[in-house]
Length: 85
Image 1 (cartoon, rainbow, N blue to C red):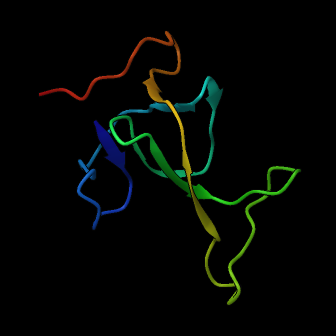
Image 2 (image 1 turned 135 degrees about the horizontal axis):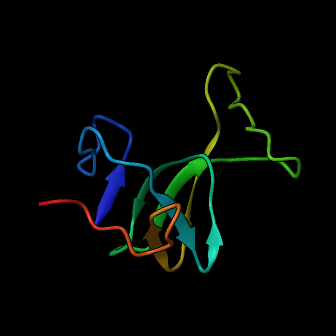
């Protein structure tokens, strides 16, 4: 499954309830797109203090693609998240 908040991305589904993205057992923040089939996550680059690092123009966030075992979990129950049909 692919979930994205970017409208141009094929994983964009309109409204998706709150979902946590985990990579290799670590909860991620500042995620734009995550795909548990390809194991890829597109997110903002953050510094050691958790602040978003701007790109060279200073107008957007710097982004990175990281890879590993991606999981989607519901925040309260920590159960596997599945998009409704």
